[in-house]
Length: 292
Image (cartoon, rainbow, N blue to C red; front, side, top):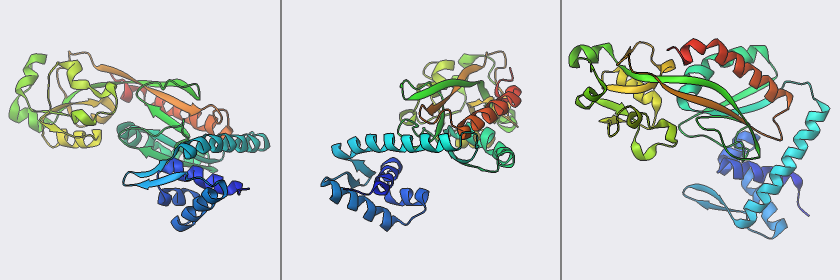
């Protein structure tokens, strides 16, 4: 028979992809995480995780046990929800895009901390997204709607993107008068083979074959390149402050953020509280998100 708490540690390690990251989230040291996983493997007489340069990899037995562990975790959360159905407290980890997370969510986090002192928010604002399906996060704000029955998916907000350049760059290089003129200017954009979502292929949408001379996988880095006079690029309008919109007669690009939560925790008080705060936030930022 195995210790159920060892299963909790195994789930954390599988979700985090490393013993150290699991230890940080659980508040225990890395060696203890390793011992607890090893004890579980001994009790079950099966190898569950394999260490590799890319991090921890699940074996077939490990993948099967992870599904069971996630179900057990969800059941425990339902018990806690029944006991504290109206308590807006606990930790909510949110995964979102780098630009939206750093420019819109991060500055507003002190507000919800004051409003909900029992909440602890963890913001993962990176290129790419963590998955609420695997319970890597509690909530994800993505560029496309996930297609899985395990998640409750709903639209959060529309937003616009446009071409921008620094005033200093335009003073030196001039400004394009038509879309075709863009081929004669320095362009800034994403590294093509590092684009993690089709919705980020902005330049091809504006002018097929348009290739950036300066490229980054980070939208914040692209913003910095453009602001430093590196050329013209597509940015979300909420990142365009201090820059000049190029070809203003060209309709802005339209995109939408989607909000996803795991079905098992969707109706918990803490998730309802965070969703309500997010909707109030995007409504208050409506003119920044979609200014044209």
